[in-house]
Amino acid sequence: MRTLAGLLAALCVLFVVTTDAARGAEPSSVPKVRLDRLSRGANVTQWFQAYGPADESHYRTYMSDDEIALIRKLGLTHVRLCVSPRYLYDPSTPDQPIAGHLADFESAIQRFLDHDLGVVVDPHNTDQKRIEGNGPWAAGYPTFWGALAGKLRHFDPNKVFFEVVNEPVFDKHEADWYAMQEKIVANIRRNAPDHTIIVTGPNWGGVDGLKKLPPLSDRNLVYSFHFYDPFTFTHQGATWSGPVPPHLKGVPFPSTPENVASVIARTDNDEAKNWLRDYGSKRWNRDRLKERLAEALAYGKENGVPLYCGEFGVFPQNAPPESRRNWFRDFASVLKESGVGYSVWGWDDGFGFGRKLVDGKPVIDTVPVEALGLNKP
Image (cartoon, rainbow, N blue to C red):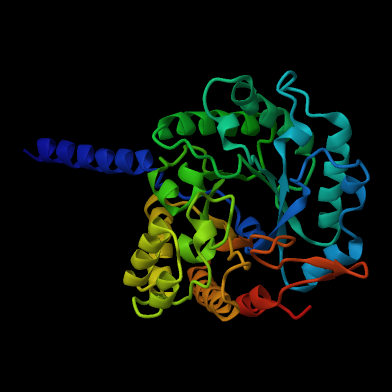
């Protein structure tokens, strides 16, 4: 009986360990120094991501050393450097990143490093359909990332991070994304064994997509999510975000049924009215933001993985300025409480710092600065 009991106990222990392993519950191997580097950041959105192509001088002169120094002066520790895959990736030769463009991209990375800023290399695919399906773009992308990792592996792995891709969608085909991401990670790891890789869930890389993502076996990973909740507020007026947001204007934050009534009354689109009623009834405020963020935190805790909020912000065109300030204040406070590293969208985009050049000098929106407790510019 003792032998049988011992055997059963051993089997129970084995089952628990195996179940935990299947859930990815082994401790993360990402060093603390790297998580500290990812603690505070901003997306640099227009340097390499806006590929037209622009004149070649754009890629060499877009940002001055003084501007890079300002980013560091604010207290930010890294940038998420968005790059259009088309700038570096030719699907006809996926194992050969475009050499001339790569030289300028590497130069930009080094300039950030010279100012004590880490860099997340973010292939920012704005045509999400290209990465789905069986076309040549998708087929060659894992090979491309492996080759790119080999070219960039000389950068300090404590300061430079590799993100698989921005906001994969794969709605109703999530399993295809899981398989593809596994392949991308394997190809990167083969050529960059020490660098930390940033992975993400499907469905535009949001909290819900993260919650669906089966943890990967590689433990030198950080798990990213983007946070634009509530979408009715953060994307009011955003013409690229579907048919409803362009009809939204003057939406307040926090929300109640009472304070959205006047907005509903002056809205001429029935679906937009429904969005507003739902937004008001859910009473979005700091507590609700905290509850939503807690869903991501629960995933990280359950699976023993570090998290990274790679994007957040509010489109300012139609948002009441005081409400935008309220949202930033409330989300920044719950994000700081969580200890999760972040990158505001963006440095040079209106959702966040909205940097503009005035007489050649960068001028930024101070709302994120104040909300995040950064240093004054």
